Length: 157
Length: 195
Image (tube, rainbow over all chains, first blue to last red; front, top):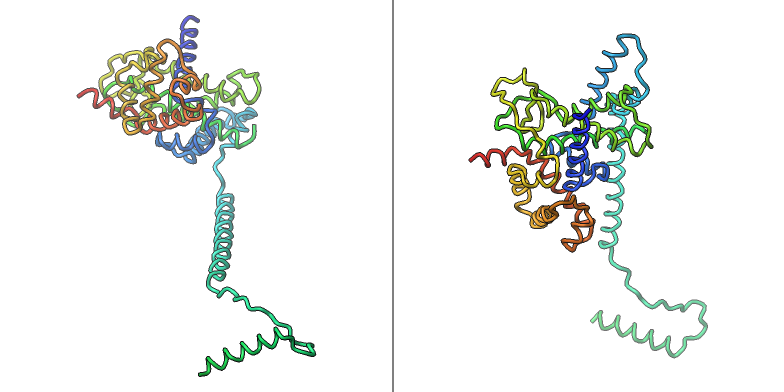
């Protein structure tokens, strides 16, 4: 009992020390957890399948082969950690490929419209004159026509 | 708990096991044993089995389960280390004495690593910290700040106040130190300290 209490005290003390130095594990995001595991040389996917195998073997050895029911919590943990089947893996690959192609097409569309926008000459603005249905030319119209005619003549020379 | 929460629980437990074994491994002997013994993943799996098979009584809310299981696992690691027959190796794994092929002299107990003050005064651990933070002024500053709290375990807020930086900055430095120590694995510091 005394030894147990001492161990509990040590655990408490060590947990506090770890918390002060590195922070709480529960505060880490999934990505940060993976990053730290990776730093320790552990691949998160392999970890999951490795632990699933240990739990699976335990369940087989202590329950299934003895024709006993696997406890609910162990069953749930096993289901959650089960590595994806070949069909699920294929589905994920297809989904990833679809997303990639979709992203590629979106990017291509955006790029092409961007390129077309810069490649086409910007429309030059000209004054639009409405001569149709005009019965008489105003003085301004006459001036304008005169100027245009002079431009044409000078360019021909 | 849903499937994603179970998967997260496994990762949390393994990160904790890595941290505990990483810290206590700094007290390991100078020889390296092979790839047998218990790994962080083994400790995590063992804890999940104990919980899954109702060997642990937990009656708190679901969000408190990871904390409870981490404490149980830390306790299990400490119990394992206290056995005379177990030595810690530098990769953070443990091995039973009857599996040893080399010197099986009793290992010094890792008690001195349990409280922060002793931990920071442990030569090998301190050397590991120094090496991990050598190229980063902010991390060095963080380690010195922790040491400044002689008799208390400082909260992130206390360290932030001392350094005059936002608390989020301290959270980020902690994560960085943890990752660097994980990568470091204490091997280098042990070798260097022997020279």
